[in-house]
Image 1 (cartoon, helix red, strand yellow):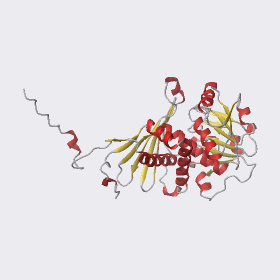
Image 2 (image 1 turned 135 degrees about the vertical axis):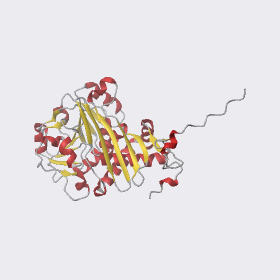
Image 3 (image 1 turned 30 degrees about the vertical axis):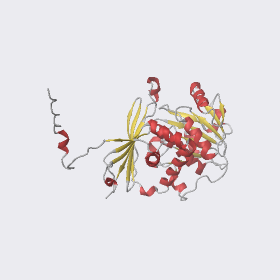
Image 4 (image 1 turned 30 degrees about the horizontal axis):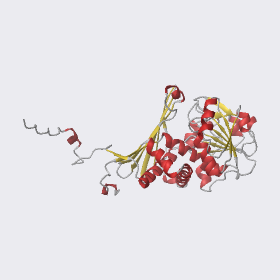
Length: 357
């Protein structure tokens, strides 16, 4: 049985707000946060068989999607609630909003409740770097970043700090998004080049990252734009009916995925036959399957986001918050004198004595 109830606050849940996570980044530093989160992700992928895995559960609507992403090992259960609504920016809301829970498997007690909107951007960027370290050409220094919205800066910084990318060519159909990114990363040390077209941005790039938001079957990257040795990090195609890569891009590449049953439905892979061969990334990380096999090979990471990465991110937040003394305690579950008597919570509280006249 878990020993968590030796702790007097064990019946309370630690809550981490957006401000708490921002404080972690400020205190630890963006490069170290990305590196440590990537380390957690890689370590968890290397114990792939330890996890009870399932594709996320999605509720689709004409304007977007709301998803639940659960996963567990023998000790810890996590889930993430996340949405994707591209038109939200018109009403002042982020396209993606998320929160998550980390719980003790032995008791079911929720130990951590955390924001995951900012954290999802961090973990997605860290996941991109984990994949690229395994699949991109060694010594890659240039990247094209197609889609300069909310997650773009995180992708840029992860590739800078974890892979040594020095120059990034930028393109977005909304010039204001590119100007925003240029402003936010003006002191990053990256050489940033705003481009007038996708073709201009990807020309000569070692790595191409696509991170667009529109819920449509788009073809952001087409076969005529491919160059030998490219690594393509396809991040934006992540639900049914939402893609970024022309099917022939995949046909001309070695394709790697997180969790095949989920990617078949949600990723760019959805536009290809069910027998199209792909490799789950954990097999490459564990040395069970090859990644890139030649300098001229084109590789694709068809990234849709998988619950294992949120598991990694939540345990990183839990541990780092404990080190820094962050968060507040919530009474998310009741404290009972008799655990079998839930009704005691409804008994009237004794009225205070009337004040003397």
